[in-house]
Length: 209
Length: 223
Image (tube, rainbow over all chains, first blue to last red; front, side, top):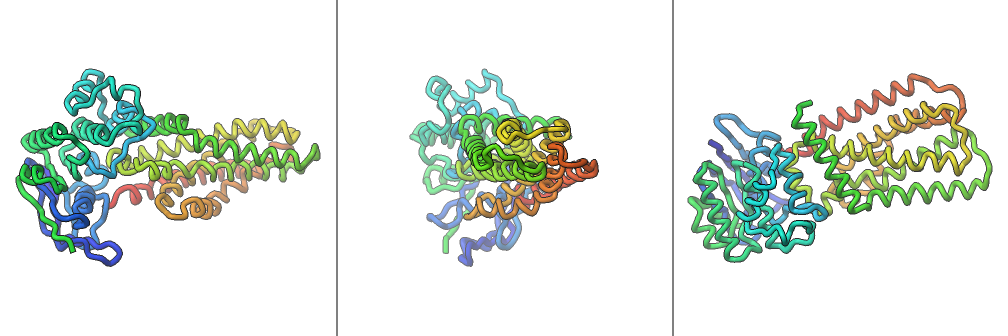
């Protein structure tokens, strides 16, 4: 059981209050949507949850089975899909996946790799020898999803996961996120997409200042 | 060190090597800087001879400034390409640091292995103790790699990254630079070498590597 608890969290940038104080808890087995207008701090909230950013005030506590996760123990259990996440432009899809997943101690054999590509709607003949820098934005988004699925992470933080995807891709996101939550993963997505918002079990609405 | 940590270090090193060979910017910058400097010095001397200590200083000035042209790229390139976030999410801190440090060391050793024979040839240097020169070069490259990797990580994202890297690098690397010059001068026939310099350089390299390892977690994790 993993939980992420926001305890009176306030975030300011250059003196401007982005949001807060926020008191909320995310838990395994549920999809939580973070909604709000542009600039309301949705992406920032995900970064705080991932401990990629320290809050201006308050605490973000990640617990797993009664133990607080910090540093490497937290990173090993989380995966993110965000527009800011980029792949190495001079490595192939396979090269990127082998590198990033290898850092987590995970390896994909050829069968698992092909099955994963098929699962996220990527075709080997299109991406086989191409560098990730040559991919379309939609293909890159699907590759991010492939890394997320293969990472084995039980905390999924997704920032606008349906962005740059076609209708089939957006359905894929909804399906995979629901399956992940049903399998006991913690899923939190920042979104302005009505379907993603509706598919969530709970929502944190950021008003913006 | 755990098996998984070593696997991570190897992965980061191999990734740096593959990307470095495909992009070639760091390699080209270091090589062109050192070749240009070497050619200028060689032509300016016009066959004249220099004192061993001055020769040693010249060799290390070339290596040091060439390192400034390339060694800072290990994190700056990740920042520019936008891949730093992926590395932060998936990469354990120590594997990233040590993998990048190992790659910078490899880069420096490759540069020294290319430049030193050219330097000896073009400036007509007599090497009386090649073993000592090799050890001095290895220890010097180790110091530059350890300090350079940490300072590159510290200065990533700074708006005046290049300038800041050079300013911070010089005082940190001075305790490596000065004995390296003395040892290289001794290898060029300029007096006896003090064994204590070798031990001192080795210890300082170790302190830099351990210090970088301890500090890097604070950079990598926002806890």
